[in-house]
Image 1: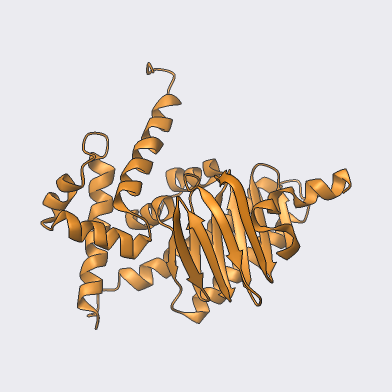
Image 2: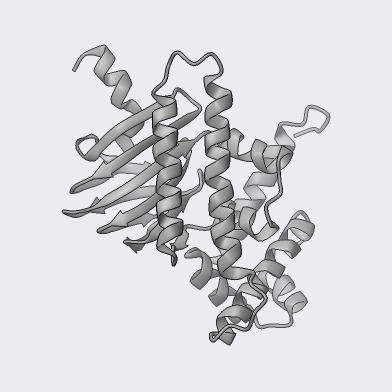
Length: 269
């Protein structure tokens, strides 16, 4: 393989090169691609993504082994893989079709830190969740269109403001994802799934409590008591809505806070 070919395909290795098409990227910044077809990748050692991944599943089925647990996603779903997720295996069958973005974590943090109109529970889902369903076909088409625009833009290597314009395209993608989440979980009209609406309200309040208290309080019992529910019920809601355990959420937030503190030169180790 030529040096040029290696450089072109390097960002796509995580997904299996034979299934990846229409690649666009800026080194160590943003990567986007389209995946079509069948592949099965098993890593000798767990692969922790260098980038924050978003995968929009259009057709077919994908199975991932993440942090020692298997997750299944089918058509009309989105997958969100934070940089703390250890990937052991990826398998997708014939007919699989998805759009993918991979972004440096600092870019995601910059959007939420400096240009943050998004509801708090959306940031919580992006930072700590593994994805969910896309109910509306129009939303699916919008997200796929956003990523296709990003691929085209990333392929224009002569643009003098490439980083800035691709930042804008990724911001648009996040905005459309936030709109999708907002429409699904924050509508005020009555829902025929009363228990589902209550669970999403609890998840939103849990996200707010975490942001306010995680530096001092790391026990499930503390947050369950504040929410006036049992620890078991809180753990069940987090697992069902975010496809990740509550202990994983707590530990990943602690690691994130520690990493931010370590970057502060005024603090001692």
